[in-house]
Length: 599
Image 1 (cartoon, rainbow, N blue to C red):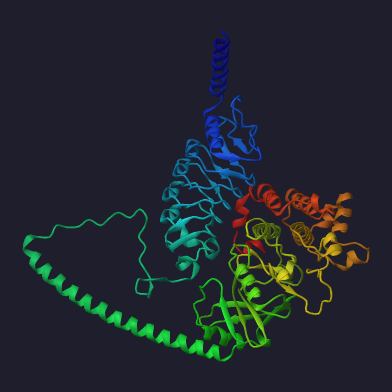
Image 2 (cartoon, rainbow, N blue to C red; image 1 turned 30 degrees about the vertical axis):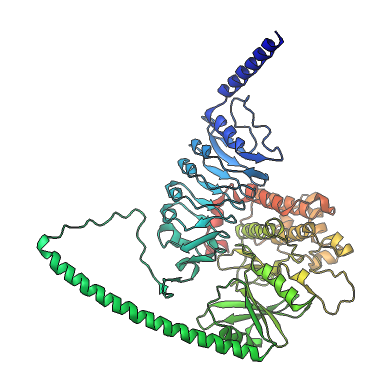
């Protein structure tokens, strides 16, 4: 009897659950299938319940108002594991999928391409593997595609070139290989969309592809949907003539290949001889050493060393806390920045070089690329990619002709946050910058920000210092606890970033004389004006396009970042999430304007 009661109870429970599931919309059922493939270790999705009528109030879910179909899945920074379920393809009205900065693995399901209304796809900073599905070219409405910082392999599908509405593409920091298709929309994106894939080549990154014989190859690119050319049937009586002609052509081709092979061997012998001469030349002076970290500097050691040794005062483009910066132009007009280190380093040269190799392996669209290291007789030199427009400090405080408008400042805040969040959360070991400031944010031709000098504060020390704990960084940007203890943490970087945000909003340096004479710094000055509701006195008068909504968001982030209590400050991943959701997501088109529109 007791067994019968238990059986009836279980049957009633199953019937009740079935009733709940039937009450839920089809999109809701699909979301539960997707949740089943995820590892929600922090229970962020605990309100995804089968007993609801629809999923429109679930965490991260938005719906179309008229039919309650799911329009958006927004679940970044949720520490979600597991895989992206193929069931995602059932959400046919989905327009935005944001799963970036999680711990997802597995492949990108091809079923995702059934979401034909998809406009924005954010899968950045996960552990996704496999290839980029060629079917992704069927998402004709896609405007944003961000697959960066994963472990994707294989070639870039030419079908992406068919996405005529695509305005933002980021495939950087993966393991993609081969030639970037020179087709359609893919032609419109430059190096920053592909950086960090060492086996890629093509016009977009100014890296020629090599043929099997080692020569630069320029291959024709067919349209992805190009129809095959029909062939005509050859009359029988011409077969003999054609066979003879083909035999002759085969013989000529064979002779040509033999000739090219002989030339190639001769060229290899010359290169080997030249390499031996360079090695002997460097070997004669044990004080000279050159290391390239990414292996893609297309110059011989002698060419680089000759250029480095010829740098003088006329090539100086700046100076900072670590030394003088030079502009080095190679014979092919490629340009690099060379930083002469004026501080000593702790430990042996081998330890120093090993630490530099770690920094040289870090690649991100918003970090300045460290290409190599050279030790001349009495000088240590670091070779970086050259960032054309100079520092944010110069644009905000010294450039009288051109001014950054509000949209450009928002983009600078966003890109700097991405670079810093990458150092804090995605590098292994994690890196604390220690010297975040406007002069260490460099702007390229597209006004894209690049964080520079990361890792150097810990690697280099002041040789004249007489204390074991040395405070690196710039006063005005330094967190109170860092000044007191000398211990740099990720939260002290967050404080410096908050000061940088205030500098972007106000157009004033942190140590502006108007603050100092009142006994305040920029943080205290801002807090005073916010309490008095004097927002118009905070914003730089040159930002005539600033809107109240985004200004308030940025000031709120800055206030949280500069909290006197380090534990109350957000992490950089949390800062980035707020910026992406509150500033970028509502109007992504603002971040695809031309250079002239931003100034």
